Image (cartoon, rainbow over the protein chains, first blue to last red):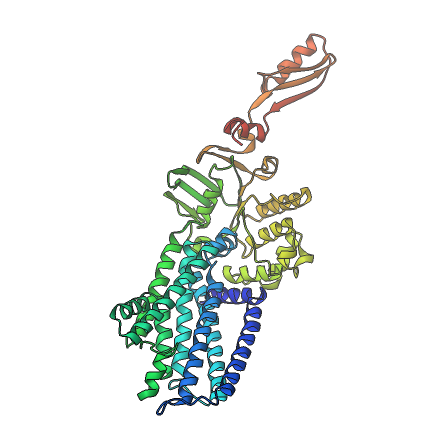
Length: 283
Length: 280
């Protein structure tokens, strides 16, 4: 256990001392400021907007803005996850940084688990903080609370943990640059799959719905994000629900009861494959 | 005699490439063994298998009686890779602290100070690694390998970036370690260095162990040189045993003898004869 703590501390120290977290915090501050300004000016400029009868204005504006914020938060959290893990094995081995660590009496599984814990916990805390900030901004400017406040944040946190394990798995086989490219391509593929599913939902296309479902299964960070979006307006009904679903962040699919067990199983399986491959790898 | 390192029938293949083949090698407790061989002979591969970075295709290696790569073996060894790098954002003291934690060493600040002093880096304990020269980093690497007081030290080209003074420091350090009973497997191209400090030398060629023994055992007689009043005469086929007879013969024939030198091959000559002149 002390080895895990040591490697986690080492990974966190590295991200702080190499000023990675400083850059992230400064740019995130800029993002939140921009989001606040955008939300504030949107509310001010749309005061004359009168929604159709029976459509709740606050729900429509608030859920759209928070959906946008969740998309940005997932992206930023995923970038952080990837940069904390993309060179964990092959990249560091090629630079000669890994060998002095793994010849110490810590198992390779321990090393990988610690790198995952470090990256996933930093990225999860980060997305929770950004999500909470955007919820508060929307509350202050729009006067709207989502139907579920906590669970969408937790799902975003789990989503970036999934991205972290994928990046860690890729790092066993690929050099840093190739791994970064591969993970971001998977990330993009997941989002596109999810968007196709949303379009399929709106247009009633079974093929597009199926693409959305399968991409969500293969890349569960997308399913978690979709479920989080869905929960923002889970209790909204009637014409408001219909109009929200037509919006750019509407039509999100619920993950269902198997989403969390599947996510846990997925992370464990991807981690196990990474450990098995790392154990067999000559350094 | 207990063994710090024992390799038996060790083989390693990288696809069709044979890196090691049926290598048997021992390093006894407190023994300093030099590992020689041209580039690609398998020296680094052997060391990597011993420290658990690579897996053997066949055969076995044990460290202090424990299988190479096991936690028990790892707690008993120190290692400096040929191509290593430490995180540039760390100071020397922080790096040693990290390795103390990973190695489970309870030596604390006293151990870190001792190690930095041993490699001549006492004044650089708070210096960041990215502000150190390559030579300083190599010395820090040796200090790092000594964290936790290992029984076996495996050093892969530990002096390649050092200046002559730095090499001398490391040579003295190796002699000091030997006195403390630490076993060392030293992989180096610097033959003169190996000849000076090693108890035994093993030569690898194309993955096979082609010669091993003490530098004296490996050295071959190269004749006797006798300086007389008419100049220096070389008796190529003669050895140490023939010196009295040769001197007596010269004196009886009226020559004045000023000096006698029994010639043996240097380690460099032995090495080049073993691996072939063009091997490098």
